[in-house]
Image 1 (cartoon, rainbow, N blue to C red):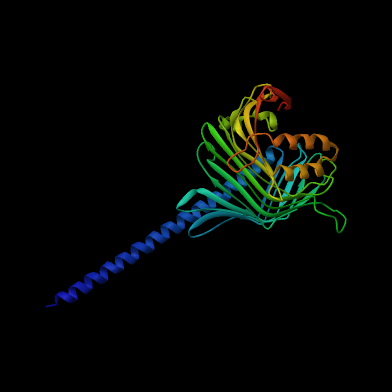
Image 2 (cartoon, helix red, strand yellow; image 1 turned 180 degrees about the vertical axis):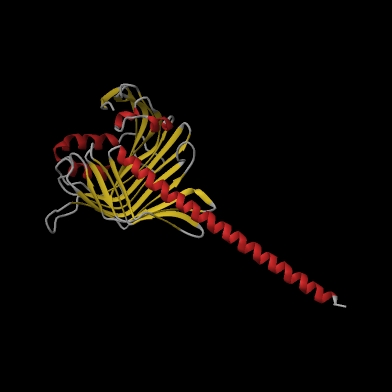
Amino acid sequence: MPSSSTTEIRKSGKFLKYLAGFIILLAIIYTGGWFYLANQLESRVATNLAAFKQKGIDATCDNAAASGYPLRLGLECTKVGWADQAKQLSVVAGSFNAAAQIYDPMHIVSQIEGPAAVDAPGMVPLDITWKDLGSSVRLDKPLPKQISVQGNDIVVNQRNAAAGSAPIAIMQGGKLSFSTTEPKMNIAWSFEKLKIADNIVYEHPLPELTGAADIELENGFALLAKPERDITILRGQSGLLNNVDLGFADGSGIAISGPFSVDNEGRISGDFNVTMRNPEGVAQAMRGILPGEENTISSVLQAMAFVPKDANGAPTLPITVKNGKMSVGFIRIGRLPSL
């Protein structure tokens, strides 16, 4: 008669066999499901590219292939491009890969390799390089909930420029992000150590710039449905400048905050606080940018000595804008152009 220990060992062995078989079965089902989804992804990419061609847009994703097994599902392309002949706009870049974790399929991250060749109306042909450039998208219905793009060590050159020519622009890092909670949209961007080549803007040298912005649009979700693709898209919008900041290498800079609105004619209204960090440093930078405005710059610098200071001791000037007309108290100081 078999002992109880022998019986337990047999039962344990059977259990392990069943467990191993169950795990193998799950692995087979999972693998089959992954490759089914991978095939669907490749088919969807081919269908979408064909649909763009019917619209006159040559979108390319060379050697498109699903990747990421077993824990991710993604797409890799050896080269990507976008060419809209009607708008004379084209962008061609290097390899591209995007993927989502199986356990979080609504969050897609991607990376794209340079260089990129950019052609657009009214611009010289550009070649753009970077150390890394990636994006993160949080999908939702009917539109993505969050989108962010970030890059480092970005260099913009004129294509076929003479050997030794300085780049058009160099930027140490930059980030742009959108987030939506219907009907609101929040837009934030920042850049570090942006240096634009001399004589590109205002035909004068520009200092190295660092900037950031955090803007909330009350009905920004509606912008996504508008056909306009220029600044007039902001007509009828209202929101809040949480902070818009432009800084110079010595730490001086200008920051603007406050609520605003734009009417249907593009006229801006709002109540803003303009803060100037180290006014003398700002004035020195502006003298280099606008050498013909020495008297105006000096007058503004003198006036800032008499305005209220914030908690950090920086002069802060309240400016009211009504239908584009700017004033400090009852003193009219100018007019903003309509959007």
